[in-house]
Length: 514
Image (cartoon, rainbow, N blue to C red; front, top):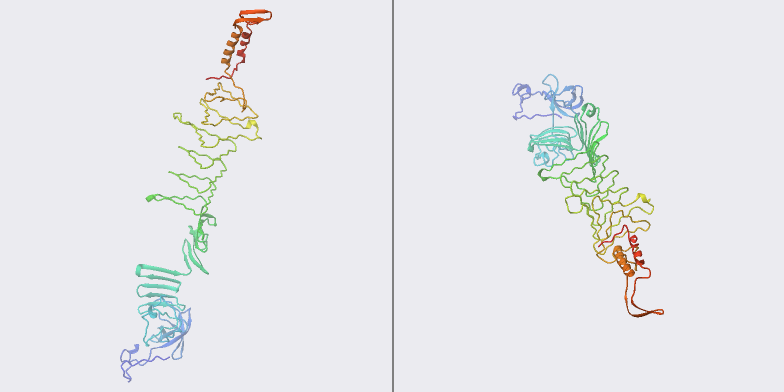
C-alpha cells in the first residue's frame, strides 16, 4: 500500500524542496524520509525487527524507538509500523493503525467488561470517516482512556473517571476506583504468597474452597522450600464447611475447630479448652442444643458456679460413677419425687445427722402420707451374723407412735425378740385387751396383777382358816343334834400355809403399773 499525501493548498505545481518546513516533511519536501512497513520477523535477543516495506524491500535488524529505557515490547509479526530514514539508518518510529473494516464478524473483547460503555454505547462513532477498530482491539474505550492491550485481551488500562484496571481476563483482574476509594480483586482462582505462607481460593469443577497454609517460623516451617505448615484453614468444599487447625510441624493436631455442612461443630484442644464469658451490659453465656449432646472428659473436671445453678430435664437423668460420689452442702438439701425413690447400696448405708441441740424439732423426720415403711435386710440364703438392723440412741429416746387404728407388728417365726432394757413400760390404759400374748387367739385368758391377787388370796385364806358362823336352828349330824356356833377347820392354818407360797409365784422381771 502506498500512502498518498494531499496538497493542502490545492496548488499542483512543483515547489522548492526548501520551501515550507524543509526535510522534516513539510509541503515543500518532495522526497519522503520514511515509509510504511510490516513486521515479518523479530529477534528477541536484539529487540530488532525484520520488516517488509511498502516498496517491497526487506530490511533486517531495524531497531524500535522506545518511550523510555524500560519500555520493552517485542513487536508481533504482522504489526504495521512507520520507518524513518532521517537518522542515517532505518528506525521503527511506532506502530500504525490503518483504516480497516468494522464488520460485526471481527473478534471483539472489552477492557471494562461493562455493557454500554465506550464504543459499545452512546459514544460509538457513527461517521464513516476515520479508523475503525482493528481485529482483537477493545470495543469500549473512549477518548481520554489509555490502555496497553495484549493479544489475548489482557490489558493495563487507565480510564476516565479515575478507574485503573490490571486484567488478564474477566475473572482475573484488579480494579481501583477514585469513587469511594474502592479496590476490587476479581478472580476465579486466587493465590497470595507471603513469608508466613500462602492464601488461596480454588474452583475445582464448581467445588470452591478458600484455604490458608502458614506457620510462625519462616526458617524451619513457613519457607517456600519448607512448607511444614502449622496453621491450616479450609473453608468451603475441602473444609466441609470450615476447618481450622493448629498442628506441629509434623502434622500432629494441637487445636481444631470444625463446622460441617450439617451444622455439627467440633472444638478440640490437646492441652484443654478454656471458655470465658463476661457479663458486661447484663450479657450472659448461653449454650443451646436442639438435638442430642455428648460430652467426654478424659481426665478431671471442675465446675465452679458463683451464684445459683438451675437444671431442668425433660426426661430421665442417669449417672454412672466409677469411683466415689461425694456431696458437701453448706446449707439445706431437699429432694422431692412425685413418684418413687429407690436407693440401693451394695455394701453399707451410713446416715449421720448432727441436729441442732437448741431446736425443739426432731433431728430426722420421715413422713409417710400413705402406705407402709418396709425394711428388708438379707435374704433367705443370708448368714444370720452378716445381716441385721441395729438402732442405737445415746442418752436419747426412741419413740414409735401409731396414730389411729394402725399396728406395730414384730414377726419373728424362727427367732426371738430380745429386749435388754432395764425397764420395759407398756401403757395399756387406752383400751381393754391392748396386750395379747400367745398370738391372735379368739378366746384367750387374761393376766392379773400378782400383788393384788396375793393380797386378795391371803385375806381369803385367813378368813377361811378362822371362819365361824351361827347355826340358827338345829342340825342333825349323824345321831346327834347340833346347835350353836361352829369353830375353826379340822386342820387349823392350812390356808395360811398356802398363802406363804404366793410370793414365789410372782415374776421377777415383769411389772404391770397403772
